[in-house]
Image 1 (cartoon, rainbow, N blue to C red):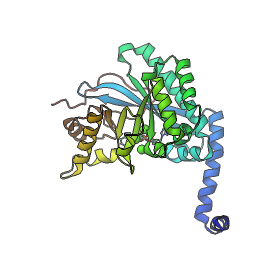
Image 2 (tube, rainbow, N blue to C red):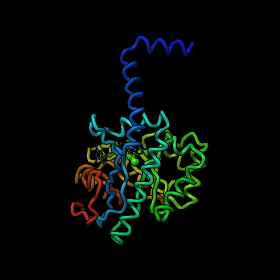
Image 3 (tube, helix red, strand yellow):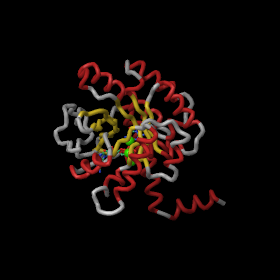
Image 4 (cartoon, rainbow, N blue to C red):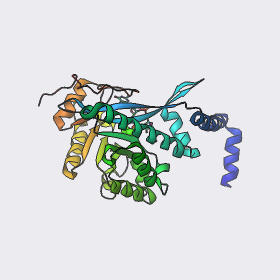
Length: 280
Ligand code: C2E
Ligand code: CA
Ligand code: CA
Ligand code: CA
């Protein structure tokens, strides 16, 4: 009966039909894009206060499509997750980012960031052998394990199982674990008891409203206290204004990421950021 309903829905809903067709098309093009080298990795600074030093960078994938132009990861990563190509694409992103980080360490020495953060999808984490792949990639790049962090979302790990096994294996390697979009899920605090975590990435939604009067800053403050209490690092995401940066700094945030400090680019500037408010 379920199959029947599905078929009917496909036959009778042109909108759905178009969307499904679009996904199939995109899915096929991702395969070609991998073969033709249309993906790039860009890097966004994560700035440490009050020094203004770029302490870390987050690697973010870009698709330079010959006809469509720049396609957002919001549009193609979910498609790649569904058709399984995220495993191959994700490994390419990981390898590219780790080699770039190793190059910066060689070329910049002390000026290089301490860590590169790479987004890893649920599908990758759920695979046996993902930790072994990570171990091989960092060895090949000559990158010490603590120089790599994997960013995972709550939904990728909340069901437990192999994802949590993988995280423990990565932890054992010395790779850092960052919980992405922290605070937006249904069991964010509960997860901290079951999943090995080093870094909380406090979601942009808490940063957006931080300078508004009233209750908005309370959650951002509670989350930094949780991170301090558990001995974790906290990164505030999506910082767009000086006022937000100042408010976060006042609440105790020491690691900030957002357009205010720099957009994701191929070749970030690692010089000290002068745009940081350092009043204590
Ligand atoms: P995310 O991991 O939460 O990454 C943060 C997103 O916010 C990035 O969008 C970044 O460019 C954007 N951003 C950073 N600062 C600001 C700001 O100040 N204001 C605003 N409005 N946006 C800001 P992007 O690169 O388009 O990536 C979107 C999402 O796609 C990511 O969210 C992540 O879930 C996924 N993604 C991106 N790259 C990868 C990847 O290499 N692998 C996987 N599995 N997913 C990826
Ligand atoms: Ca992320
Ligand atoms: Ca995020
Ligand atoms: Ca996000």
